[in-house]
Image 1 (cartoon, helix red, strand yellow):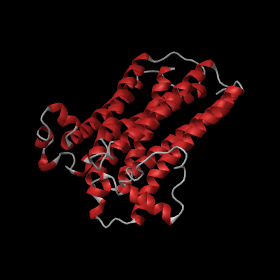
Image 2 (cartoon, helix red, strand yellow; image 1 turned 90 degrees about the vertical axis):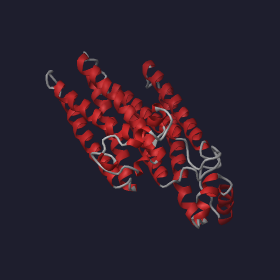
Image 3 (cartoon, helix red, strand yellow; image 1 turned 90 degrees about the horizontal axis):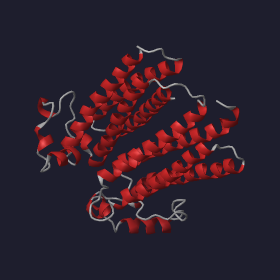
Image 4 (cartoon, helix red, strand yellow; image 1 turned 180 degrees about the horizontal axis):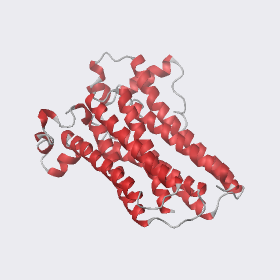
Length: 340
């Protein structure tokens, strides 16, 4: 690490931490069914929640105009106090988004003025800025889908929003690693190839994790290693929707089947990468990356199993999502070390 890059690296890693926190809070928002509590978006006036009973009542009355209240919560003796709880998590999620914007833009301008960024790093940071703006749009796009006719967001939009947050985090970490390890070394091409393949399957698994969350598909087939009735692939996987593609992307059983089966593929690829890497002369960084990667994937696999068996309890669902972040971090680090 070059001394002049230290403050830039701290800035980028701070962004990674905030993105991690935002996804965690987003997970809580989803698991507590809080995501549709704020029915409008104002960049400035929603910075803080309502401060008086009058404003809370006005916000609650506005919420009553939308499908989630009219079709679900109206039957649950839902009070303004209940509304305050779900409002908090959605507000907090958006508030962190604002903080991320400030934490990125203000130091970025400062580093530009002070000429602390190379032309290559500036290009990467502009990409990050665009990714952050697009992520905000995806959040609005997702919420909008649950405010029209159905009291739930599109699982496609939820997964897109979640996955793009993971990708933004991964790219931010990659840019930071470029500065932490500025000296270029020859890539280990066979390991880089398999690490890239593993990364692709890990991203697909994250996408399907979003599908499972969006469809509440973790609340069925709460058995392992088989699905319901002792079947590896339950018959409902193929009959919920009219076509195979729709069954595997919109059917609850089909989406869960892909997610639970893909877990074996991800574990297998990471274990394969671990043993294949031992045939090469590895640095301490390479060994640390692969060792942590194997440890994390087995922890994540077990968390997935228990999350399913316990029908997605709040804390387990959240820990499972957090561990996905750690696993992705280890994957990014390992791929970076095999690449540069």
